[in-house]
Image 1 (cartoon, helix red, strand yellow):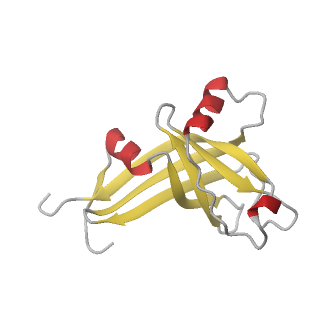
Image 2 (cartoon, rainbow, N blue to C red):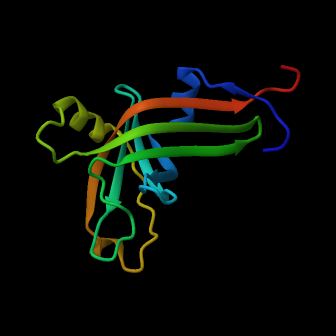
Image 3 (cartoon, rainbow, N blue to C red):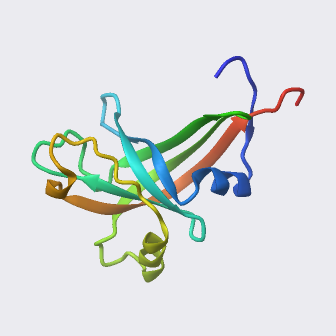
Length: 148
């Protein structure tokens, strides 16, 4: 990102950029210290505007528990037309919770969460949990075309 201006992505551009899934960075609020940030894969359902995540939680994990912790999630990419990014903020909700709607579970079936192997053991030996991001705010920005 050089010396460039940013403009907002409209909803159609944001949905096209996010697709059905990909990778980004999730940051967990961490009290008085810096946030805990990790690369994650995500699924996105444009019908509901929902982000879904497959997160590993085991005995040696460093990430905070997902309950009632504010998170931000960033997807970014450099393209031939310039950079693009989407930032979503909110809280994670387990898809196992009783109050997760049938609509959200249907949306989870429509997304494509890539399985990215960043673990020190085979992924078949890793326990994953699925979460939906209850968003408080979603913004998208892109590099302004030259002359705008």
